[in-house]
Length: 294
Image (cartoon, rainbow, N blue to C red; front, side, top):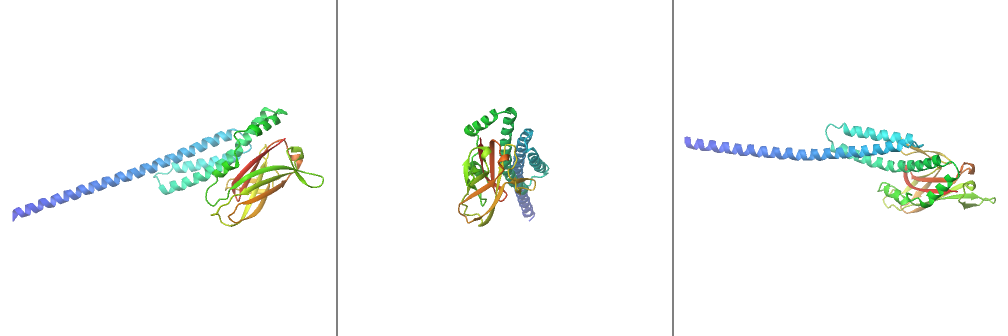
């Protein structure tokens, strides 16, 4: 009887040891998986910080060029710095917050493309104006218009516009117009004869976009970064607004639609050089083109 009790006691001890070993193995496995997940989230957090740091450096370089857009660039830079600091201040990596930050970075990159495009254009013009204050400046601008391999075509901008239901613009073209004594408008390439700009473009087909009215805004910018024939302000974000030269409303029915905008200007305000035309659908830049006047 006593031997049976001893044997039972040994089995109980063995079972308890097996259960304890299983618990230790399970705990070790959970700790290992948790560490892997934590390390992965921490790596993503560091990657987000590096992306934001790179954006900040690019903004600092653009601001240092001291164009008329420096204030707008500084505002956007401060917004990125605040976002970067928020990411750094996360004590514990939070996957849900990191996803939110990822989406916000995507929106920032879209805004960056538009701001840097305008700033680069102004920087080129500023350098040319500083270097050449005589008629040679006009020749250089004409040469750039002819041989500029860095021209950003409309299709390139379309590829940067958010996918999905956002409408896209294609085949944008700006034409300078002269008014004859009869009142008829004809095409011209000379600044001193320009009485209006005709902007032609196509809003592409988008089957998933909601049907209905769309507000279209046209902005024409001269070489000084000024908006011609400004009619009002368009709010792009809480921190960023732009002036527009013309606005119209189109009825969008999920099919491509051709749009023509005619912006009348005072020919006394038109100088030789390059003019940039930005096209906005609602508050999103959807296309751009440019024209050089002699």
